[in-house]
Image (cartoon, rainbow, N blue to C red):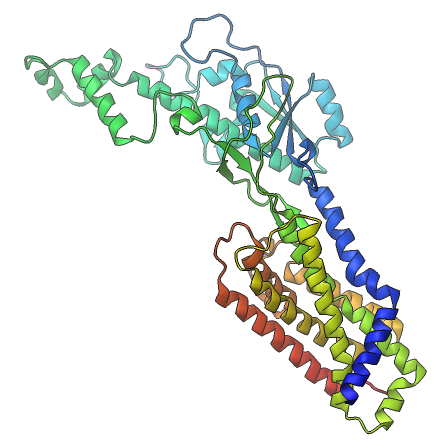
Length: 493
């Protein structure tokens, strides 16, 4: 059969070209490995994989004044909260001067300064007014905690805005977890006290009459109010004054970044509870070795697989140009072979190479990078097949239109990069503007990435099978349309 004969001949030519192996197999693995190394946690759990929070502690503490809480400086409480956050390691820098030099050189995007008054200002934080609390401070506002109200400064490097923003937001979350329980606990301690009951009598004059009832007293009423509030909010301990005590939770927290395709972006500094792995230790450097899900390869491997699947058009284009230069295409046109048979004969080896590439890279992801295939691994087969059909179709279209190797390099490289950028292979799609996100659906990459995210994202317990199959259908349609167009416009002479 002429189609199979042409396919076998082209397959031998593709396999004989060393550029094919480098572009289609070696390059994706190298890129995935480099990005994995950049993100950390490639084969071991090491401190460099965590967000480093550099801190200078100038805090002078609370002195020797008698108090029930806390039993140590507030700066130590804040550092312990940061250390209890998974994926965070705390680095203590000896002096403000050294911190300024590190920031100026770009070695640190930001350094946190806990000023001399930090403990004393934190101790003054309160929800209630001056008659209940001496010289109170309310540091809360719309966006979190007013750091300057607590004597917290940030030395930032203006050339690293993303890194400094991440550090400031992490510290903001810890400040909220430290300050809010303390403010709630103080307010709850006042309920039922004489000063509180006097204020209640001012607002409810009838209480004065109630006190005349035998067996009824301010103390009993105060105890009743405290008990009623505690029972109403039964899942919280308002006396605790710490976040873990307030929420009655001993679990750790984690700060996550969003990873997709070739990019890692600290997209959401969402504080999520994680099971505790190891208790933090006190000292100059606090590092919590938590065990969060290592998800980068679940996203990196599909991203590189999809992107490099379409690098096939460079190899196919070079092969087409070489055959045109050697007169092979002209001889095929003179033979009793239809144009459709020629196009199909050249598309089949492209499809075969793309299928090998897709399954090989997923297998490498499993064996080398330790990724998992989710709860429905059998659905990866139609995704790889449909992506290969789309890649083979587009490769044939570009190869048929290009006349020279220069045109193949220019058209192919530009097309691959533009499609990868628009689709979300280079940048997480959730970061794209809404109109660009919708526009990305014209690319086969976006549909393939959507199917892979359903199957390989560890946060998706049960993939939407209909969504996966829809993506596969769109990819197959894309490939078929490209093949039909290439049959009509390809230059075979």
